[in-house]
Image (cartoon, rainbow, N blue to C red; front, side, top):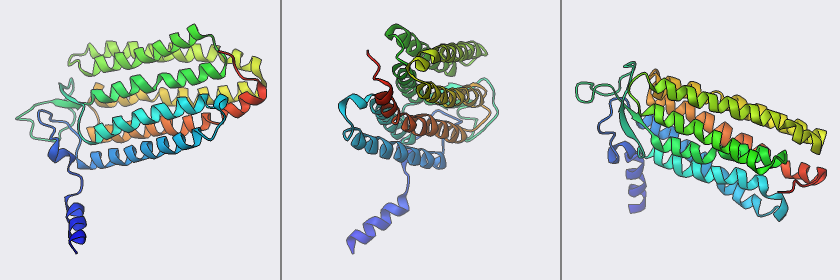
Length: 271
């Protein structure tokens, strides 16, 4: 009977993340609804990471390359979304535009909750896509390293822009967007390497790059509407970025785990 009342008490309390970790000092911040969504995203990443971890060890050692590049970002995303859902890993930053309101602005006028943990998460996870494409197309290591550097530069620029109050934040935004396009151009030029391995290899490389590139180009829009222009609420930002991350770091990497089978048929890249 006591167990029943304990469970009932837990159900009544629900999500207490914002009660325990209050967003003090921020006018524009996530609410319990936003935190609930982030907990759901956390469960998606945690489940995917665990399942991929199990299936990875059922593969031959030489066919685990793309499992590694899929499961590592998933674990990082799991930790990041746990932190985000718990209302941790953020700092209040004065917004350039005062478009949305959550709390009484008389106490903390115009300060938006900026989750720097999200940028750390992207900095660690995004390069795995360029690594996957580089390995698949048998691109030389210096080129892979340079592409990973540009990918990290995109995140650093966006993080710097998110903590700048003035219009100079859009200068960092421009640097980040340029880094994205430079990386995508480099990856497109590497398509010929994939074609030399085989037509099927080239086709899948192109399909993977098209899907990843399309999703990646939406991230600047999300940033401009949230931390950049303060147009949408932090809850909407959480949903927007959460959907992008689930597609970019679960659905697309999951498809990449089929690449080792094709690689085994066409000839394993040497690195």
